[in-house]
Length: 94
Image 1 (cartoon, rainbow, N blue to C red):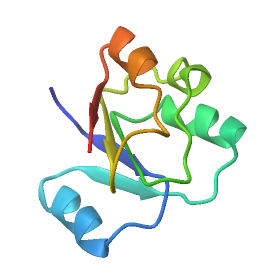
Image 2: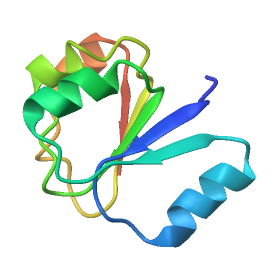
Image 3: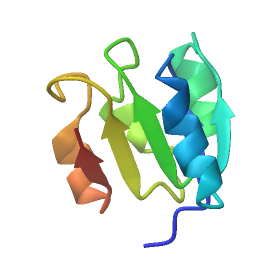
């Protein structure tokens, strides 16, 4: 699974971005997106990193053209529709 572009949708430790970039991954940080903004952005990324504020619902996942991975920084994945992600072949990690 090749991950080339990652969207970080909330504030995470700066080392997260650095580790990804040090491994040749393009990282975009964009906080406080509305659901519509997330839908518009997500189609361009291979991975999405969220915390608890970003809701990754089935209708958001529907727009995820090349998304392969959703990473949840924190505890639990209650803000991610794991079933919809799984149906689309997207791995959800915490």
